[in-house]
Length: 481
Image 1 (spheres, rainbow, N blue to C red):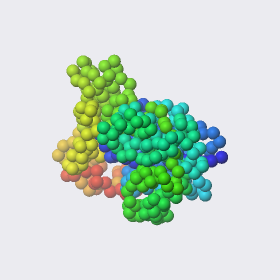
Image 2 (tube, rainbow, N blue to C red; image 1 turned 120 degrees about the vertical axis):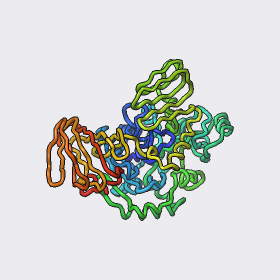
Image 3 (cartoon, helix red, strand yellow; image 1 turned 30 degrees about the vertical axis):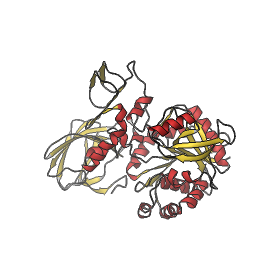
Image 4 (cartoon, one colour; image 1 turned 90 degrees about the vertical axis):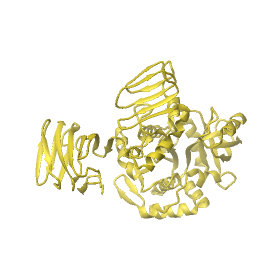
């Protein structure tokens, strides 16, 4: 009975979905098509797989160090408690990410079949997906590399393509791969569609852990060797596994496709493609999000507090206030508390140019939302001026902030819901609703929610400097520095 290990690649920043997607809260953690985030959907999609005569093992999640608590919290929300999170100290693209997953999968002296999938895709038909994975697992069990290809329904220029040969068995199930093709221009994309035999590359691979490592060593021994060095010096912290930071930073940054897959046709490493017709989308732009959402009779996909009149084929995501439309069409309107995007739908790929400008200007809106998630809960900066800042803070039941102090600011805390256990210097007090306390500049302090319901409070900061880097953590439950 072969072991099957899901590998969920949870990197990426989703810059084309700004302002909902930010580097500190990227698109895979957003709920765009239902109640679950894309990451949660990907995890559940693999967790409920039923592959005959096989054993499904807990998933391996590969994500950036910065997103580890986001990933862990979202796994808790879907009641998944068996997993490992492999942390990239810095993004090095998907080839090193898959390599550390393969090395972890081989830890128990077994050679499981890996189902490798990005965390930020939508697949609407689980049954068809499962059938395709079943065929891919059979191919992988014999030593082949299996890749899922999406049957194209339009001349798409935003995807790489797979050119298939005549199938090696059943035409609907298994195709030999002739070559991989880079993202084409519009003329070539239409030509591929007319000719047939071309498929979009979904970035979903099925192969044995040893097959990946052998192929990587064959085609890119530099990536294999350096990633192995980083892995040999890994550290383990509960569910978190960290390759050595300095060694990992020296790994060449390369994708799975460029490093291995594009070299496989005609090589000793057989690669097979299984067509997938299951309502797939990588949600790579806002017009792709509009494509898959339910629409009203005017073709509008509206979410949040939205009023529309005489408006057509428009996407609106309103998160914090009323958005009104009058006499518009083919627009993208994304509203968040601190940024609004308005774009022509046909130009939605160009959102990345706005992200580039934000990066050049070093603006906070590139990285974080106004509401910032932390492992203990969240805070929302609702107002600020020259020497003050006002935050709403929510602390999860039984959670605790770090024992800390600030050099440049004092803080006033007012409890509005729940109860707070406050360490204030050498004193420890319990605050209930409508009670408050004052933390002077330089005073050691800590906030704990001892209750069973979320703690909510208002924090008023005052002082000469109010930046988040004025936090000296003395002890911390989450091993943050």
